[in-house]
Amino acid sequence: MRPSDLAREHGISTQAVRNYERDGCLPPAARTPTGYRIYSELHAAALRAFLALVAANGHATAGQVMTAVHAERLDGALTALDRGHAQLLRDRETLAAVREAVDHLTATAASSPGPPDRPTPSGPLAPPTPSGPLSIGEVAHRLGLTPATLRTWETAGILTPARDRTTGHRGYLPADVRDAELAHLLRRGGYPLHHIATVVRQIRTAGGTEELAAALDGWQRRLTARGLAMLTAAARLGDYLTLRSLPESA
Picture (cartoon, rainbow, N blue to C red):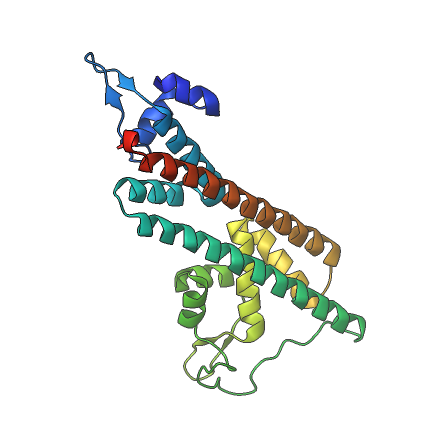
């Protein structure tokens, strides 16, 4: 096969095929005496696997998986995939928690004359415990973010952690952590900060639930599509690994 033969199947350019080979996402091509690349079904299977991984996990993870495979580090490739599945599961759990929070807040708002009160400490914040406020570092670690990102979200009005009166340190209560989880979920979906701030405020006040429900339904569809894409990517990668293990592919 020529580069154009591989490119045509996926609607990409021949330069993209060459770039993927250069970056280690495809195995090295054989060369004719005059220097032209010669690809085989092995390369076609590698390209199918790589592009399916891109659709499921993004370019960075897809490249990490394929380069690990070609460096004979299969466990490294599988670990990268495991992280993607773990993140998808976390997103599903976060979405379920957000729906539950919305249902709870909506019910609370319906049974009270005003918006539900947000618990705040009456004095200096107690030391962080499993049932007490968390520090900004603990919340950042929990979400796999940096404290600077949480401060940016606070500036945007997404997070409103209380402050210790003595030290000025932030203390994240369960409601704050819930807001941060939701912000992280929506941020990965490409939502701008001002939109996320609006959604979080709707959860806090249990108002505008139709717009919020539509946003959560959209994320549910995205998560389902990603899960299905991961299944496809796993099948394509399995096909490639099987073909790669055959003696004539060595």
